[in-house]
Amino acid sequence: MPSSVSARAPLPAALRPAARSGLRIRQATFHRQRASCILPPPLVCGTAANDVEAPLSSSSNGAPKLRAQANLATAAVHGGERSGRPNVADSLTTPIVQTSTYHFRNTAELIDYNEGRLESFEYGRYGNPTSKACEAKIKALEGAEDCLVSASGMNAVTSMLLSLVPSGGHIVTTSDCYWRTRQFMLNFLPKMHVGVSVIAPNDLVALQEALDKHSVTLFFSESPTNPYLRCVDIPAIARLCHAKGAHVCIDSTFATPINQQALTLGADLVLHSATKYLAGHNDVLAGALCGKKELVDKVRDFHHIMGGVVDPHAAYLLLRGMKTLQLRVERHNASALDIAHRLEAHPKIDRVWYPGLESHPDHAIAARQMSGFGGVVSFEVRGGLQECISFIDNVKLPYIAPSLGGVESLIEMPAVQSYWAFGPERRAEIGIKENLIRFSIGIEDVEDVWADLVQALEFVP
Ligand SMILES: *Cc1c(COP(=O)(O)O)cnc(C)c1O
Image (tube, rainbow, N blue to C red; front, top):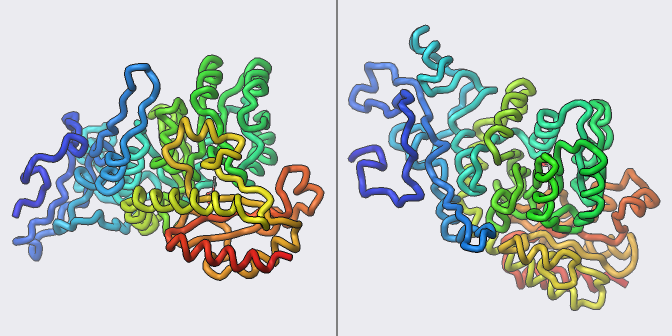
């Protein structure tokens, strides 16, 4: 049997590798008949980055056209894995290349590598074939020019900010936010003389004021945000920022590329805590940053110095998790919307925060720019901290745990889980309600999930 896919039936256009640019690529196929008497040639990954083209286009009225779910489902399974990645013993899956370094046959080869005539790897901090396949898959999913995978979402956030925002620069961010990101911006960036303006999500007047007043390098916001699922109007923000030369980076962790194509909507960069939906199984930490090549390149150079690399085994878990991303997200979307509606009608619930509900302040924006609303539903239990504890301590199916985006349902009270040390006054100041629940719906049967929530709500006095 021929070992390369190209020897069989032609691949669909979306899967065909882009033409290689005359680069030599070390061939990786083992010579099986001679394997016992020769040293296997070095494992090599070629142009994995090119192997699923992003089928993006504009509709006739110039508005960005989101990609069909079918394209995304195919990209989730095959992106990064059909050409250019290591071929070890004709393994169907991408191997875990568990190495810290790579060798060269001779000095001439090393010089060829240095001068870009030979594509290979040099040292684990600068790249690995397994993590490169992850990057290629995420690129395909986001329709990005480039992608950098790293050790955690926070590593992606901090590396991005430190490498793209100069000393004396200024960033604009929104008020609802993953707490560690906010902490980095408020406590660490000022040490580098970086100014930070915090605006309410979608306060475009405040954004324009900040853009007029400061030399803004970057706008950075989650969309949807944590924990109130606020959605920022990405095309409108991109227009204002680009007019002033500022870049836009969207943390799309809660959305996933299945529900939101932030780059098509106008962002320059999109960031993920790949720990959440991308990996999807609550078993690994990773981060991803993708978008314009010139920007990702800058972050990659810095990343090579800082060294927050993803381990090859973690990269494999991420790669494997992403294959089912479209299926999982479809289920998360459907279950969350269903549960959000039912919670909204429940007498022991004061308020539900879910962008798929008409009652959510950003529903119209979400409906315009998202194709699904994700698997996180936040809600306020009638009463205060104690009443909320009575509820959460009686749920049986979801685990009480931080994090989100995995197959298991997870539930938490932000006031206790992430903001306990703040105390009640400071929590009130930053808008974290005592009776707030953040619920990350897994892929369990939705009726089982609902029955469990209902029985636990009976414990609320
Ligand atoms: C979890 C999370 C992060 C941090 O990612 P880690 O992988 O935990 O480092 C950043 N942003 C958002 C929106 C998150 O949910």
